[in-house]
Amino acid sequence: MQRKAILKTMMMMAAGAVSVLALLAGGTSPASAGSKLTYFTWSGYELPDFHKDFLAKHPDDVEISTFGDDDDALTKVKAGFHPDIAHPCYDKIARWNKEGLLQPIETAKIKNWDKIFPVFRNLPDIQAGEGKVWMVPWDWGNTSVLYRTDLVKDPEASWNLLWDKKYSGRIAVIDAVHDTPVVAALLAGVNPFDMSPADLEKVAAKLHEQRPLVSSYTTDMTSVEQSLASGQLVAAMTWNASAVALKKQGVPVEFMKPKEGMLTWACGFVMLKGTQHADLAYDFINSRLEADSGKFLIESYGYGASTSSAFAAVPKDELQNLQLPDDPDTMLKTTVFTGPMKQNDDLAKMFEKVKAGG
Image (tube, rainbow, N blue to C red; front, side, top):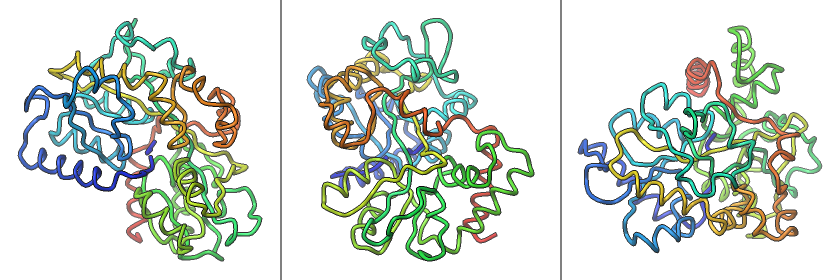
């Protein structure tokens, strides 16, 4: 579920990374460091365009740090970094909960809760009791193969392109357990979300088969986009935003619809246990659920917003251009939804071993 690409945020990413490192080094909890709300999110989601209403009410009252993958985010929070709000993906919520990191969010205080699509509002692992949830869904999107149409001619619509020996050294995949290993599982013919020891061996074999062909395992989509634009890479596993960014630059790329199914992920906001800024947190979440915030997300990154009101604000022809249906249920009929993985830890260890050449 990392799920996300960067446009115009290189300097902000660097600032976010420095902020996180400083907090970890000093052992200081931002929740106790002052009166500002602290928000921990994927790089690219820190832009003020996403929370204009909050800033209008609370100028300069938010500090934002970024991460490249929500596994890394969980590790940092467990190590002592304590933001008020974080932005993990749905498949990780049970793990955050197991660590005792979250406090319930009252849906009565989320003014646009009823505008969130039911498919996200009713996700099992976010339920925290009557009128309460562990996560407020905010964004969703797809993971697929982005390829250069001038360098890869009429490929089969299949994830197997990322295993094609013709393109050895010119392929990149995502360095996250909920992405590349999940695709390997699909190609190996096993259920990615509940695997037996024998299934894990099949997935390991598929990953070993791919490893010599891969130029990099990465979550740095800016570098991937640059390499695709230059032709250094001909195909890569990316998210919607990379396709949007490169097409705007005039690079001939296509975001594939693999016959095995694109991966669809959903992410959202969690409130960390013990926050001293719950009122600010609710204002922030409510601001992010405004239609103009979701409209900006859709039009700028090509991701889906969690609310029907955001989609209603985007012209139909724009949605068609972005290959986004105005109802996620339509997308989910042909994609693989990334949910909790029962063998996440075993799969993560195996993936690390494969990447290390073991």
